[in-house]
Image (tube, rainbow, N blue to C red; front, side):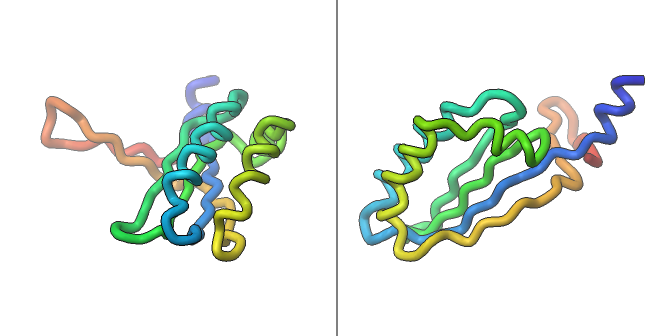
Length: 117
């Protein structure tokens, strides 16, 4: 029964879309990686995407539930994000999204597995 309940449980994604001051994306990337490395309970992974030839990007952080993000806030993480704040041209646009489906590639099969969250 727990496998069925796990199947019904939806994952959440915290998404931040922003633009850094010219030439500051690399510094922001290092700070992002340092902050995310402090996460543990409920953390399911993260991506930092950079638009080609720009300092615009999208950060996506996956969580088991929204409360896990608040539970993972700590002094180290907050200090890192404070160092990052001045690198933005303006504050990023942020939001939470529910992960509705996830498609994983199958290495040995032309068919793909579709998992509806």
